[in-house]
Amino acid sequence: MKAPRELWTSRVAFILAAAGSAVGLGNIWRFSYVVGTNGGAAFVIVYLIIIALIGYPMMVTEVTLGRKTHKNAIGAFKALAPNTPWWLVGALGVLAGFVILSFYSVVAGWSLSYFFKTIGGSLGAGADFEGAFVSHISAAWAPVIWHAVFMAITLAIIAAGVVKGISRTVRVLMPVLFVLLILLVLRSLTLPGAGAGLSFYLQPDFSDLTAQSILAAVGQAFFTLSLGMGCMITYGSYLSDNDDVPDNSAWVVGLDTLIAIIAGFAIFPAVFALGFDPAAGAGLAFITLPAVFAEMPAGVLFGAVFFLLLSIAALTSAISLLEVVVAWLVDEYQMARKKAALMIGVLIFLLGIPASLSMGAVDISVGGMPFFDFLDFFQESILLPLGGLLTAVFAGHVWTARTTRESANTNHGKIVIGAWYEVLIKYIVPIAIAIVMIFGLIEALG
Ligand code: PFF
Image (cartoon, rainbow, N blue to C red; front, top):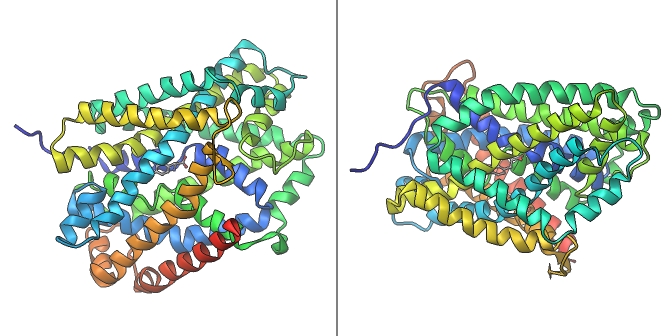
């Protein structure tokens, strides 16, 4: 007999799991390097506007679609628009789950190995932090093995089911990560020369903005909030009909944004104080933060705890990525959860291998970019914005904005979704994303 579909055990369980999905490498590793390569403060402002104008309404929309249908990313569209091609939007999301997790797990592997490197003392004061990072990621074996370790843990948790492992872990560990980040901010801000970093992060120069950097801000907003690929549809589908949507969504968006902004205060003052290049790219956090730890008393301890927590934050996001794919196979094809987790986990691991090797061990490039960068570019510039755009069109025009809004407001808490939502989801969100995608892609590919 088929087991009944799982439900979160409480409202807090949902918020923690969804916030656990949202808060991850995207807030610390990806946020800092994307801000760094896109000019700093002006980019941050655009990013915040996008979070408010697109991020929150999209979060409400996806969670509502999930709660309404109690289905996976593809099944939700099938349930609301049977016998139409709209399920393809969900399929795009499943594809995004594959693509993102394959390189996400590689980066999570870097974080795991940095935990051990920190304990081992090879990243102490006076180390060549940049050289250590480059030689770490360009090695052939070690990063692939750490990627395998991380995928194995992710797969095991998802095989066990959503409810048990996830919420319990997140409840304890997220607050600790938060406290550690604050400690890092304090150390970073009091380094001599930190001021230049603050002005990079806080004083906007709008001439730094390009169409491509605005597209990057949209892509980062979707990535960091786990939107545009049915992840929040899937997590929303484990809510009961009595659970609230608007308040819960606000919590998830608020926590995620707060953590990204704080991470910037930990990273940029230190980047400038210690003489690193803010546009250094994917290594920024892995180069800068160990250098800050080396300047702190008990730095080895703090550093080790930090990388452990970063790995755990990555894990609570990785499981949500895998869950999108697994929930689809379990719901639509009645596949056993364990079998689905194993099969998909292995496939994603395999796709991650060329991503890892392309960081320097082997020359694997697509469209002139290392394969790793290509996967990230593909999800940031095409998969997530397009998924978000189509989801907005679906909610706004197919299921209709009025119905979506009423559904979102069913059993609401403090926040009630007003008529503004209908204007945003029907017109502003899809048109803004379309314009940004077109101009951003022309610039990027031109
Ligand atoms: N939001 C995660 C992060 O910021 O690290 C990454 C992510 C998780 C993206 C789940 C998309 C997703 F569906």
